[in-house]
Image (cartoon, rainbow, N blue to C red; front, side):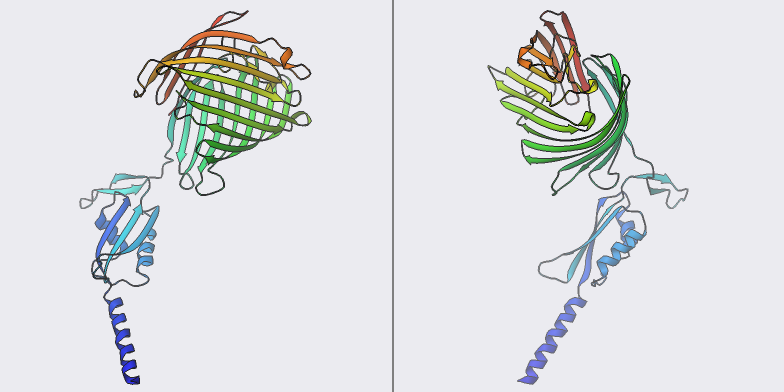
Length: 415
């Protein structure tokens, strides 16, 4: 019996060795982002059909491909080619050449060759927009995607006109972490404050993190530092803030039966510490046909008097049509609006156009004064608007009670 047991173990060991020895490559597949021929990649990999597969084969093939320095990413996988016969192995090679271009080699046998691009690979995105009270801003954003890995974009916004700005921004999407997105940047900018008619010069560095708590709920935190030059004032201060937004709008350009509420609070070290708050609440109710009734309440406040360059401004397309942007400035701002939006195009059209009628009201006050004691400024009017994939334009004609009739134009082009 003992001899039979030893014989059985010997046979089993022999069968095991035979199985390992018979594990051979029956096919080689090449996948990935590459314009190098499959035959060339197989040659660089140093394997052929019929070769024996060992424990180190996959690592050796990957090392040979990486040693060529022609690929940004290399992955080599082993798959069984047959359910019935486990000795038949399929080798899958996945490579990514990244950005490449084709060069003429002068060799008649190989007249062209693939060379990895060493250029910066910058993308150029035009910037064009008009903000009521500041005029037209135009420029370009230079961007480099995947600068230091996947989902990382480095960009350089450069604008002139209403806002003169030069900056650098880093944007990274984060998966399966406590935050979904991280952004950071720095900039120098200048634009003219329409209330004081004075240039506001700023240098700023900042960092921000965002997280989607639910499908309609997003929270964010921002920290930064600013240097401001305004009139004869030269201020430097740090800033830290938190904001949360609840947004059920499917199409922000033309929402229906939806709400948008954003609340923010931030702390600034200017003037021995100031806390600002901002609440923007909007509701959209569908009426007859495509008509939508839009309601809005906006309140911006602070716990102490703000320096002039931080005071919220009343007037213009942003909160009080019928009055010029920068009609008033104060530590506290309150604005209300009601608007009937009537689309003139089909909901299935890519570009949407329509008209609206509206009424706005708003006021400001400084610390020490009561908001309820202030007189509301009121404006009435109508607008023509257009929204497409990358273009938004709004032209409003409004009359301010006790003021004049004004034309407000706002819009942007984004890609």
